[in-house]
Amino acid sequence: IGFSQSLLSQLEESKDRFLAGEEDDDVGWQVPLSGSDVVLIHLARALIYNPEVLVMNRPTARLPESTSTLVIKLIDEFVKNKGVELSNTDVWRRRPRTAFVSFVRLQGVRAAD
Image 1: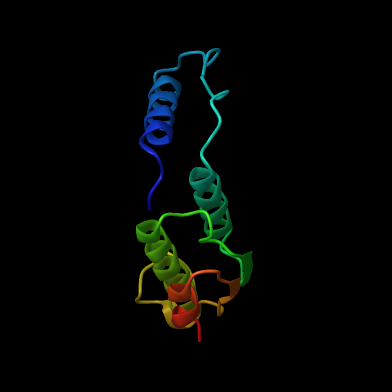
Image 2: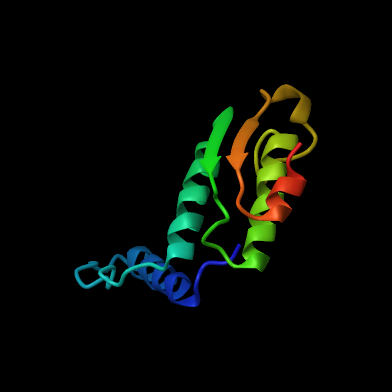
C-alpha cells in the first residue's frame, strides 16, 4: 500500500535472517517507524483479523493522498467482498462485513455510503 522503503527493507532482512536460521540479536528495530507506517501496520493487523465489524477513526489522516486513496479502496473491498484478497467465487458463503469509519479527507466522505 505504501510502507516506507526503510521498513520494507528491514522486514525483508529480518525474514531472510529468520529463514536462514540466524539469531536475531541486532535487529535494528529500535529505529522509530513513521506515522504513516504505524497507521498502515494497524490497518493490516485489523484486516488480517478479518472482523465482521471494523471501526476506525480517521484511518487516512496521517497518510499521503495517494496512499489514502488505496486505503479507501481497500476498506471498500473489505466490505463488498466480505474480506480482503479472497476469491470472489464464494462471497455468498461469507458473513457480511461492516466498516464504521470517520474520515477527515473529502475523498473518504465521498466514498462512504
